[in-house]
Image (cartoon, rainbow over all chains, first blue to last red; front, top):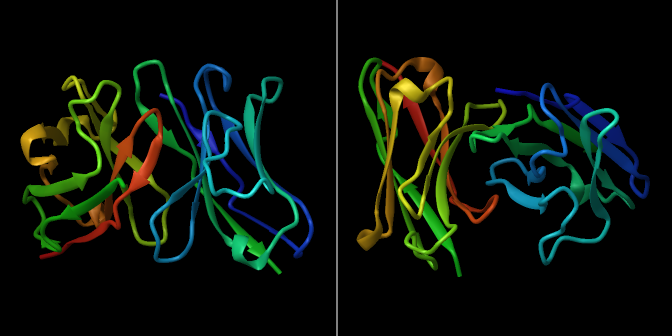
Length: 111
Length: 117
């Protein structure tokens, strides 16, 4: 099986842009879609990005997703940061056997 | 409107078997392409996928926990049941069930299960 590695934490100021990375340990990042979930304290996760770069309805276009084959990683970019974006973010993907994997999560602080 | 809700014991003893039920509405688990999965999260730690069952009764398990897990569905009751054997204090976590229609797009509120003697 593979792992998804995320930075433990990132921080940025309101109004700025932040990017959270998610590196796949084996197999191509492009082989299977990547999703990104936001989890606020005490709440269930909600989907921010699905299928690498698609936003569910209701998610602001400040959130965008991408993959980079050269670094075998996915990225979540949040522009125009707001204090309400402060949360934990998890990337997730799966393998050819339909085994699902979550990254270790990144705590975003907006200060 | 899709909703899911987890139910089960809040406290189990080490070595016991945990049985959790996910009761859902707003979709049918007999619809092609639909699945329901279980994910857990120890306090202060990351999400961990456990198991997933599809509309056609295809079942997938986390390789690291496969020997301890069983997932079943009752389509008529709109329920999915997860059993985990030989519980240990490290299994203390919030357990979530989630609708899967290509990804986990709807989640339950989660249920905290504590493993302690």
